[in-house]
Image 1 (cartoon, rainbow, N blue to C red):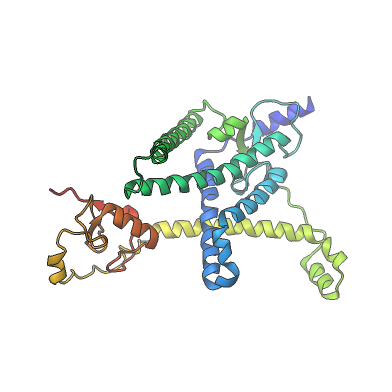
Image 2 (image 1 turned 45 degrees about the horizontal axis):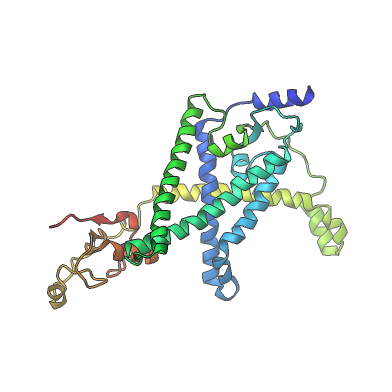
Length: 336
């Protein structure tokens, strides 16, 4: 009876708003790209020591994310981003395995880790493979062999599955807004979990201080320094949370700032020379007639769509003027 009462107490706490659940999902999706930028900067600064981190970044982040999510699920019954916004996970169905306090059953913890860590990792790998096949298909490198036909079929099937997945997420969120679903996402509904507002955290004063830690390290008393490790661990987690807030702030700053292309002055029109007459109506990259003519607005040049999209994805700039550009800025031309 006490276990059931504890379950009811946690379930009847405040229901998170759609802004809270979407904000925590946005934070979770921002951490990995932000850390990748840091790793790329370190690799560029110290190529001999950190270049391997870029190659194995997905696996390194998988290990880091697994440890981070396991810690928060074990101690706060929530993922890192959910705990950051003051949320926790609770079962929607009464179970005899439910424990009092902020701790999920072991099976739900493992399922949460699988859907929070392993599923995004596998999806990211599949996205890269399918995107590479899609580029090969656009470039005409996929022939009529059985293997190439299977790749084309896989591209279409994966696109359909992605559409169905996004549609299911949208439908689940709509049912959550209408009050007809306890969970806002299909993954939580699959595990039989829902999000609720966490109770106010009780502040516990540290028995040891930083001066005790530094004094123990200076005097060489390693045993005395080890008893202060919980304090150091809490400080490290607090630093991660503050770093997450900084990531959100920088993301807002980047989205509100004008893009690099719009902040640049209008480039002068290219000078007409004999090459312009010779290569008229030709793509400046492949020097062939346009295939799906596409203009890059930052410079005004017209390319084949496949040529310019591949170049912009790889270099993020115009191949002729070197002005910064993005694939989203490409404009297709419908000419006779």
